[in-house]
Image 1 (tube, one colour):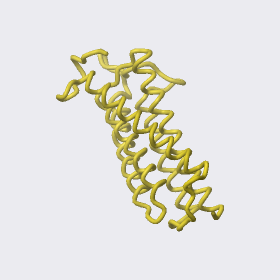
Image 2 (cartoon, helix red, strand yellow):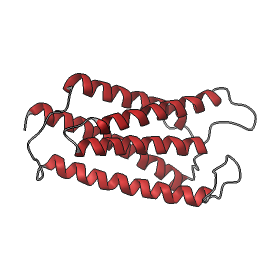
Image 3 (cartoon, helix red, strand yellow):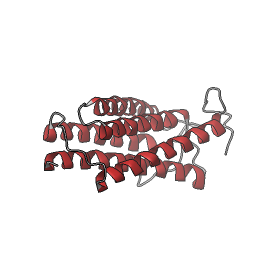
Image 4 (cartoon, one colour):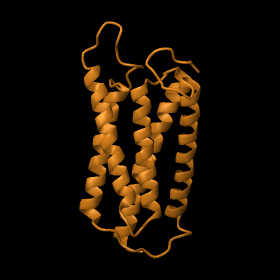
Amino acid sequence: MPIVVVLDRLVLLLMLAALAAILTAAMVLQVAFGEIPCPLCLLQRVAMLGCCFGLVRQLRAEESQRGAGLGLVFALLLLVISARQTLLDIVPRPGHSYVGQAVFGMHMPVWSVVIAVALLAGFATRFALFGAPRAAAETAGSAMRRSARGLEIYVVFICAINFVAVVLQCGFGECHTFGYRLL
C-alpha cells in the first residue's frame, strides 16, 4: 500500500481516537464527578459524535470524501454551538455561571471551540497533504484496519452510553436548564 494512503488513514485514525478520548473524558466527568451537562453541552457531544461517525465513514470508504465532508459539517456545527455558549457565558451573571468545573483552566464550551478549530485544521491539513482519495489495496488483515474497527465499535459504545445518560437526565422530552433528573 502506498505510504500516502497509510499516512492518510493514520491521520483519520488519530482524529477519531482523540475524539473518542474526549467523549470518554466527558462521560467520566459526568458519571464519576457529577458534572451534569447542560443542553448546549449535550448538543456539543452530538456534534462530536457526528464528527466521529464522519471519520468512521471515511475510514471505511476509500473512493469518496463524503465521510470527511460529514465530519467537516459536524465540526462547523460544534464550532457554532460552542462559540454561542462561550459568548453567552463570557461575563458571568448572578445565578448563571459556567456549568461544571474548569479543566486545565477552561470550561467545556471553551474547550469545544478549541476542539472544533483543531478538527477543522486537521481536516484542512489532511486535504492539503493528501488531496483526493486514492484507491488502496485491500488491507483487511492489517493492524490499522483492526485498530479502526475496534475504535469504531468503541465510538458506537460511547454513543450508546451518551444516549442512555441523556434519557436518564432529561427523559424523552426537551432537556431544559432547570429541573434535571439527576443521575
